[in-house]
Figure 1 (cartoon, each protein chain N blue to C red):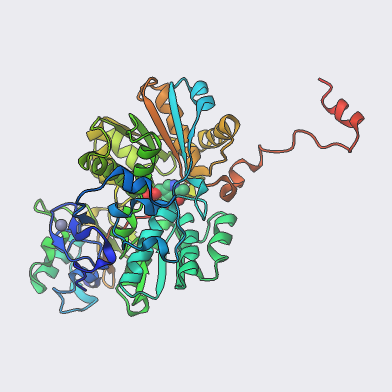
Figure 2: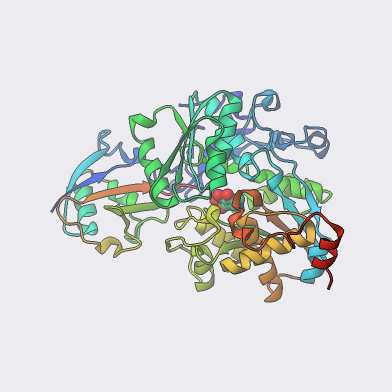
Length: 416
Length: 91
Ligand SMILES: Cc1ncc(COP(=O)(O)O)c(C=O)c1O
Ligand SMILES: [Zn+2]
């Protein structure tokens, strides 16, 4: 399918192998046939100006000139995600001893996680390639995002999840009316299943957002970088903490920052990228600490199920980026995840899911161990909504008192 | 030992489009060597110049990712199902 000169992909010109540079026509392919390396979208951006972006819609389509999407993408039926709040987190900063901290709160997306960003790009690719069914392997959030996007676009959907996910994620994945298939196994096993389904005629004309549409999907995470820079007044943060499951998001935030520098949209200053994992699924953090440049897969066991990918495809790139930028990859245990969810809620009024707990927990740990500079401008991502992982805090977040409806009862209950 | 090998889409040019081929060998290394004899060039797509499994490919013997077992020395008893699968991004 040679669509290189089709206008459906805006400034995108080709797919290029991130490992060996081999070029391919834009199409529903994701791995290099020379070396299996992941394919990335390559562009010819031309001139992109701040004013054009600023006059665009208040969603990710304001950056359409930097994405593999058609010029008129904002008029198509899609979820219009993004332009989420960048919260100046002075209370949390004070508690942690940081001078300047912002929380990029992506729980404000249509299906309450950053996944709406990536799915929206994959959806446009699915339309361009004539696919009738949108699919994915998911740790939970992606399944809901795919179901919702397909419903809006009028496509069929069939999404695959590990059977042991949180109830709220299962409900959210199912409610949009597409097919939801729960698989007895880990995410990595679901992923493997999907890879085999793609080669089979059962999966023909299916767009798997994170498999055969992965090069397009992944570009969606660049919009986090663009938004953060624009919301800071067209400036890059000095340091940023990002959760890592497959490592796609972190890898693309870095790509987004580099593009902004290259296009002259922000000043060329060094920034440091830090990755966050849960101890019970920390293959990238372990490789970072051991000085390795490949990642040994693990079997996940953590409450941070959205980050429970034991065999992270972009793990090697996370290691490269953390080392290149002077960042690090760190992990926290489940107890610290719960503490961090409560810390963020108590200080800033933001209720994060476990992935956000991992990221804020790692932020706190990195401040304590001196890896983060307390005087530098810092951004931390909250990528999902606490309502999807209620069990993590349900036992601790309880009524302060249960009383009869009388002043006397209230006075007695709070006598001391 | 006779085994079967599932071929990912991007390598099916080597197998005339076949999604599954039969192979032979007591370990994964031997199976891949034989596979390269039967379908010249395919081995170099799965292993890098130093003979290690490429960093973006996953190989399974049965249900097990061989990075959890003995890598290329993983035994492949008769009837084993071997799968070669490109790494994919998650979530
Ligand atoms: C809430 C949340 N945050 C972060 C991630 C990490 O994404 P990636 O696989 O791109 O590293 C996920 C992935 O599933 C997620 O659901
Ligand atoms: Zn390549």
